[in-house]
Length: 564
Image (cartoon, rainbow, N blue to C red; front, side, top):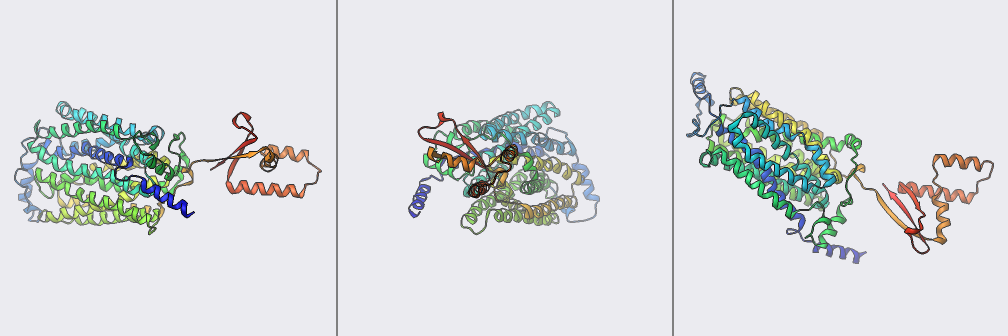
């Protein structure tokens, strides 16, 4: 045993890590999610410099006539009162609807993308989706200047195409990530979402002022072009499973395949929909996903507007400062992924407790900080930025919480599960921007306070449900069937028949009962029957006997025991 363990440890030492194919997949996936969020978020900043300020005079009059307050003493920074690049007269309601229209498309393809990825592979699904997203982004400036209807159409199509990203990559990691590396690999891949927000929010403000095509147009051309180039890199570097990768080492292939809980080379043809619907682990993950997304999407789509309307930052500072919270989120997300796997591998916490710890810290911390932001005035805007940064930093801890939890309890169905939970969690993306717009008609600090109260309420509810029902243990319905082949000699065939054919169907039982009526039961045979039945019960198996001599050579026959 000691020799075997030493061989296994030596084998694991031979498996490459940072330059392994699984980590190369994570690196390319990281850049992929940078671009996923670049094409999603770019409009949130661009719309600030695309739309003319319609109410600047009315707002100044209101401020002059209002009661003296801390908010009344605040003014916009220089260069923000007049935007020389603005081209559109979209109302606040129109802007909110445009931002929300993305999610009308985003909600459609979540479950189909997960199902397709589990069956045919996440590599192709993600790559094709990003190719379509790049085209939609490149066409946006032209369509925006043509018709607002085309703006809605492009945003919906962009939602449809980028919706495949999370389910497809989740499915891919269900086939590539060893159990004790899941937090690290998955959280690192999804760090791209935060860097995508950071780079887009910080650069978009600059491009609005100094970019080509009247500033804001350059935002879409650059992000769309980079996405197109990335698609080719993705298809070259990645593969759907370790066995299909042309450049993977044999040591890494064996290491991954031996550690994954199911056979990754068998296509997932059937999905246990009923078991999924009845699973408390799925419902806990779904609730956490939806509640987290309410806070996340509220900040994602409305933070630049809050920076402008309440904190009075100009466009260039708006983009830069809107990015600061997501820098903090990227740091916390990376630390969460690394420390979570350390806690699990050292046996400090099991998987279930690890997921609950990180997810509830994310909810409670984000909720408390959000409420605090609502009471900060524009005179204390540096404090507001700090609190927002801490709030978003706490949300980064979910990368070791619900985000990876699908792969913990059902790696075989991780794609479709993420599609299900993200479908429900997309509803906040559709509703949250509209709610934020409806709650802030006068753009006042007190109105924005209610926006943050709503976020805190969702955080509290998510913490309670996930804390009670989450699980990190693989579910019974997510396990593979296991076949055990046993070869026996002909001299043992009679004994095998005596033991294993004594598992009759109901019909056989009736026939046997009628045939043997009145005969005494042999005590020794009864003992053998009981022994065989107990053995079958212990294995919880269906036992089949194969008599096809063409499949077996010599004096041997083969019995296949299928264990569920």
